[in-house]
Amino acid sequence: MKTKLPSVCLAFVFLITFGVPSNVSAEDSGMAMATDAVIARPLCLAATAIGSVLWVAMLPLSIPTKSVNRSAQALVVTPYKATFTRPLGDFESLKE
Image (cartoon, rainbow, N blue to C red; front, side, top):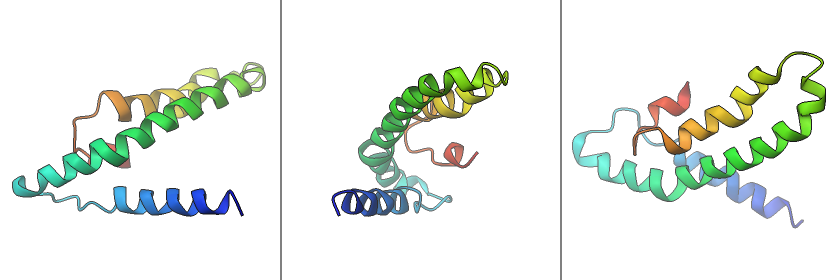
């Protein structure tokens, strides 16, 4: 019961965050920027932290399979770029 409520809330936040229309006009960019700053950036930062912990935990399994770089890209670098290098309000780069 305790994990069901946060899971539902997180799913709701993702729906709101990624439900921003891709054809945002100049007058709507303020709303996209506000949504990005308040919802998307903190979620991307959390994804970076969780991905880093998972990457370190899975490192003993990824070294023998020579997939360290691939797992680092997927778990650490991609969320990091979405958090710190993406322009504010740009949701198009999250779809890639």
